[in-house]
Length: 348
Ligand code: FMN
Figure 1 (cartoon, rainbow, N blue to C red):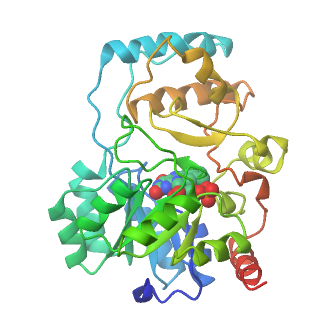
Figure 2 (tube, protein in one colour):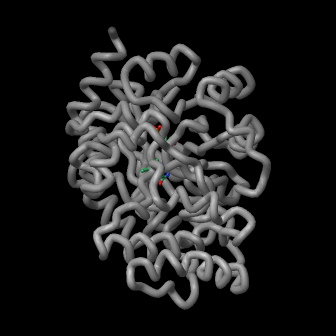
């Protein structure tokens, strides 16, 4: 059902803003799968440079992913209280918290330059995370011949995706690494696992379903296909590839004992996301009842500042080391080798 893409194998390397590089995506594409870049954390100029680089490395189709969250309304009182809560951690590293917090990423929903860029560059696929853009934006991208994917964490979100005329649904289970793509982070979350979610969507939706969350090897991909998915989207499995932008501490954490422990927390960025358990995720308990986390991505400004202050003093425990529950199954090999290995394992 993703026939237009002419993939040799039903494998998608997940877009991972800040972690997936054009080199990683190109290696995956050249190995016959679908490579992705995430441009949610950059602007149109940054995205242009990434797409240009990727186009120079592969002639095959690729996916460009954007963040479609609601633009937050700054709340100075809440943000100041949050900075007060984090202040002792900053002091521990001889730093002071920023005086105020900024909305560090512009949502695609209000980024006309990014839309113009995508219409000009026409990647084979554009995917949406955190909701859907306006109907006229969807129509313009489709008119340009771009295939559209969107993340769903529930049947209700999948039905909205279907009604909006998107081409495929990325069914993201609770096991997944990184941010949950839920449309409204304040709404109740049933936290469906990949198995149940994929089956629900396959049974109730007409669109092709792509399974994401906790899939780390060929057996996992084969299981997802058996559940009715047309492809599997793997994020964490590709973080350990040398072509990713993960730093040494992240790579070491993924291959160590710590990989057995992941936590879902809104504390780092303002939206629920799964990361390797570290000093930052541990703050969740002490934050309870003390301070409310600012909205996404305002909270992330504080999170990144704290990580930078800690890292400058050699403490890596405040990094956002996004990873899914399958993290201990990570294997450090090149992206081409990983795709080859996954395909071999699928056939076993
Ligand atoms: N999904 C997106 O749609 N956009 C992103 O920018 C994005 N960034 C991620 C960064 C990291 C490091 C990871 C691990 C995941 C990210 N995700 C993002 C989620 C993936 O699309 C996917 O749902 C998830 O990786 C699947 O679970 P897995 O990590 O267990 O394979």
